[in-house]
Length: 72
Image (cartoon, rainbow, N blue to C red; front, side, top):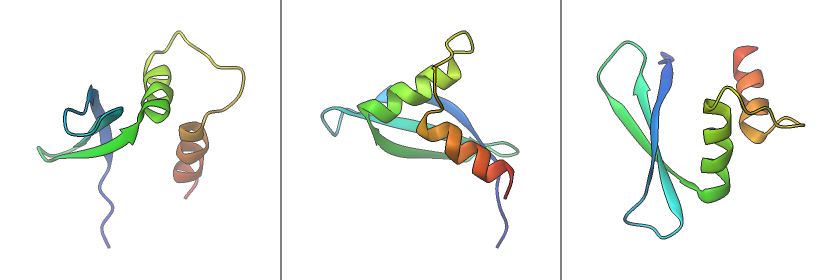
């Protein structure tokens, strides 16, 4: 199986599901995009991570996931 590196392209409010957001992932070396529907709390967590000046007091869910994947 070939792993494909993805980057976060953006977050947008989902018009199809109330209270949900679409996390748009993009291939690091390509043009394909992958939308993933996430909840409001998850969208807020990702938005905090993207905003470099905000530092939460404890690791958020995506921090644990990111740390695990980098050590994979």
